[in-house]
Image (cartoon, rainbow, N blue to C red; front, side):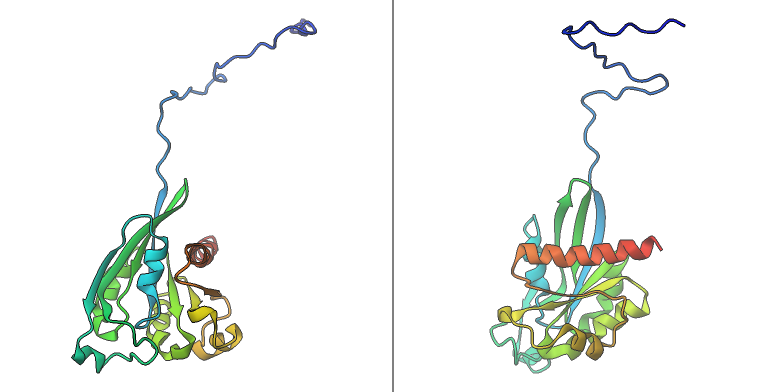
Length: 214
């Protein structure tokens, strides 16, 4: 049986750009596929750091709907641990970040006050998952967000915002106090640090994808 001759030692290698039989060759100028858009919700109580979280990582100027806290609102919202806070989100925060060439997150921050809860269904629709931000000095402020995701069976993770670099309680105690299931991820992050926010978002993403994969 005849066979192809071996190349002569020292001769240049023969190469071909021809596609294999049955395979079409793509033109060189085919644009790269755009990253997959994924919606994620940033939730939690009043003044826990939702707006800061979105602003810290967004690759665009974040869209915020901040309004000044009036004397009437101050009588409703607890400012004990956030005396410097002069504005509050009344509709949503929005930003986006490209995690890698294949994935882009669109972040929707919810308003923290229960009186704006009627907006949640619209903000959460189509979301892959949620990040519930917790201030351990005011754990009860995040119960509404935890309940919302649990009752709608939406994947979420709990992220303890380390205010002043400190966490008041152990994560095991936080899980017990919030009464969240063992499969719900808990993490600690700093809403002011871009890398820390990215890590927290990846926790949500991995949890949601694991659930979707069964």
